[in-house]
Length: 393
Image (cartoon, rainbow, N blue to C red; front, side):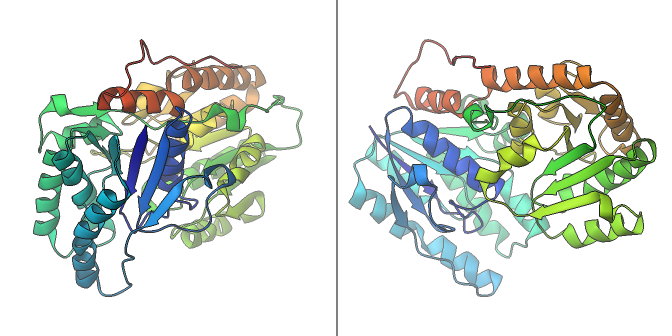
């Protein structure tokens, strides 16, 4: 069986270090583990492929030059005929799987014309996100592309229920399938975590691109309060981004800079080791009316057997059973976050039990392997009796 994976988004380096990059790589790996030949069509490669993905054929779509935004949008739109020709040239394929990007419709229309399934993965209300955070000149054309590609796709894969609600503005609910992010538990299987109040430090960890919507000021305020009660508390920030300067300035102003370590952007291979250095991991989102994320970081925290403290918002309300496999805090509440962290510091037993239950949750319900099986099932290419995987300790 042959599948074409398409990522025409110039903001996603498919072999890069972003969460979206990891998502692309893990879906491809999981499809390969189903004994499927995957060919990748991408606008931005982002470096050399990981060692285990060097066997896939990579077709580089035309690059988007760094010109003014209106010109970039037109160039991105003009790629569609090239994409369609490439798919025709390197086919035939049994399935076209595409990660939705703002200007791409050629792949789904090609699948429709060829009479093969075309699945479109949608991770956000991208038009609104682009207009709010990065700038969008030709809003009307972006809406036209969305209408076109959503209609052409055989089915839409929404990463959260909130994204599904957004897509229902375009297509019927029955065409949309919610598949949250997942994790590869084998990456985190070697941990033998020690839980004790006698350890030299108590490390609170965060992983992610340092962008405004990750609630970093909430984390800073919570850590300041925690540090007053737990002098050996440390903060480990894994990732880089536009908010780093503000974050460092805030920590310096609070006298906490020497208690914080920034790793900067790291290779995905380094993430398991860094998670192993944490005692608890956090996702401190602020209150938002349209929280549509499926936070990859939380799935990886849980796979690492870490106790997690996360905001009770969006998909996290479905993932976390507070007090069982993690702790939910009111979104934006730094005091509640600090109190939850102190509670975990005081109870190594609770940290252990939450971490074990967290790992069990993601292994049983959220592996990339199970996601690949669901994708094939939706495409009508494979109908496993149930989407279960072996539970590994």
